[in-house]
Length: 229
Picture 1 (cartoon, rainbow, N blue to C red):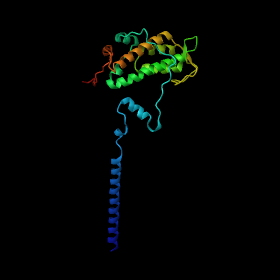
Picture 2: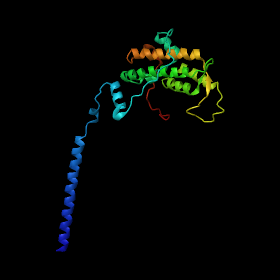
Picture 3: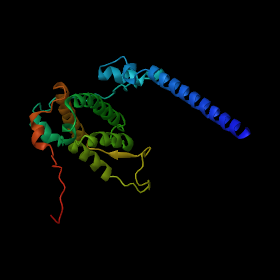
């Protein structure tokens, strides 16, 4: 009868759709299996080479460092780790939380960064004065305070505090074009050199922290405290 015919037709249609769905699922699974393993896409195994390969993937370019017009001299800088920690007021807690391998890669880059940005600050020096651009010194302070080189960061902050920002009402501007601020050049150079020497010491030790770091690491015990216990 017509009801039975319609029912059989519906069943056949559903069965056909189910077969198509299963075949579709099969094709999807096969395609997924044929996709290359992301871990096998990169030829480089060395972290530095891998970073370069990723950066230049699909036509990307590897960033080039600027030419340093002002070189930072480390002549006369102490080579004793205790003295360097005293001078730089470095808090090594952040560095201590990295693995040795990660720390080594990090400080290698940082060693170039601090010298590059020091040069940028000194290049902005107005001839015959101690005035440097706010923007370059702000960049330098962000770099040094990020790793807790507190001594040279405080010198930068003193320079900022000596200038009125009344003409720049922004709360936290990224740039203040043309604003020059007075900087204690001797102290700035001295403490930047000390910070650079300490970073170089860690680089030369391939990421190992010097003994003077240990008593300065802040260790926080992870516990939950309840007033009613």
